[in-house]
Image (cartoon, rainbow, N blue to C red):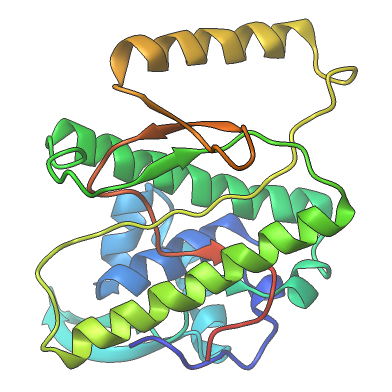
Length: 241
């Protein structure tokens, strides 16, 4: 189980998108610089420099070396997750936080698309995908992020419990997003039109179950699917150890 923390601030370490992608990939599998450079369509020399930064920070480690065309190919795995604490997150600029978040969301969408295409997304009746639009005050915002952190802690525990039972053969992705929407006065008309187009597409392309809480009166759209997305998390409360 990946748990060791790197020696440098992970937030600063992941301030470059290529290092984020590399750490995420090495969380899921072992790979060499040559393999990842091909996957990412980047110069191997550039990627090698970024991988050296990750290795020096003890975020990844060498696990195997193999002869390859007159040289030696080195394979690495991550020894920490791409997970940023609230304190570390505040050290990043708005642009760096946005870049990190974009990668997480893009990976989540890619995972979900793959699962939908493979028709595993909705094969289990007890899967969960929830979109919950709401309004909260500052304390509510903090409470929601704390709840997301508690959910992640529980997910880690479930992962460990599964490993203790001999592992598992069900590939799963978990995505948790809590983010602020633009105020209506700040949202452009083009953005509103784009949102409506996406909403209409989702209504025609994906089955939606509407649930209304009798207690709060709030309606939530729940899409039902087996795999969602994971690997890195940008989390608020505290780091997992």
